[in-house]
Length: 422
Image (cartoon, rainbow, N blue to C red; front, side):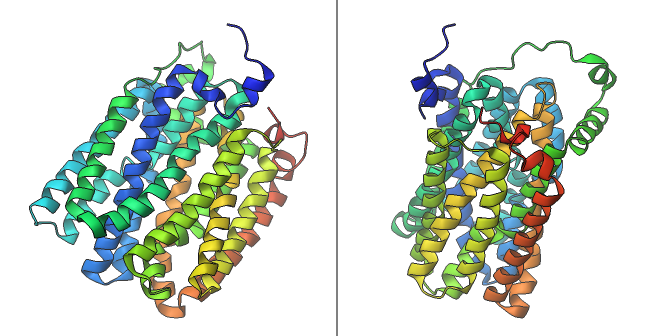
């Protein structure tokens, strides 16, 4: 095959030269749109039906329940192929959404239905992003990896913009039932596109270590040891856990609380808040995906993580909606510059044989999100929203500096693999 020209390599559209990516991108897009519409629709329903921030954070935590089991998804992906696993999980999302649609349209929906179905979906959902990254890593050349990850991330970023409009304003206009029909249709569309994604490439011999891993537990132990002994992987994993624990709760699970009780702007205002963060994230992903900047992934991950915590700290103190929207846009922008390089560090540092399991372990970091949400409920009730954001963001900023110092040779030095420009 003739290698593409330098101009083609630099283009944000270069990943679409790969046939598998042309199917994966719309499949990921439909899935992300459905995820975020569902989260806002059900989050607002739970808050309105129960009037409890504690119930809201429990619902948010259930959506990420499966992060605890994500390493086993990595093992399964290694065995049956990530494409097959992706198709199975996306078929399950469609089925669960269809059940919720029937309950809504028949006017029999109750909060316990939402909690039960969210728990089932939460067992599968956290591994979806990891499987997307593994597929990108399998199908893209190293020089296209960072750009492809940036373009891939636009699927979740545009979804948050769409969800902010369709998931909140849409419910107000057409009702919860028709809006959930749209969610179910998106899941079905994602499943159909996922069928066109490339299957696993033929495996070369993996050596004595892999031959010894004859069962899932042994394979998982092998992957955990692999991550633990590679400073760049361990540092990136620590950063992923940190932002899930201390940053994401305020831009995901607690946004309905900010809209209702901090700014007093109602359901349509929730859409504005979510849309501001999503628009910033989309802008950041487009800049990363354009490959116009020679980003050193390890350094950018750390600096952007610190900037993200500063934005969250300031957002928590703001009381004017205009200021809050600007700060959420900034938080979304630097979030993309943190998480996309983070994924690139982990994919670059992982061997082909270990990549799926490593990314499965990376999803364990999402467990920080439900932990952070569950802790935020009583903290907000005791000291208030502004003090809670100050506490979370200050701890996050200090921990980011500590991670950068602890793994400075692997994540900060210009010669480190994590900072390669390829």
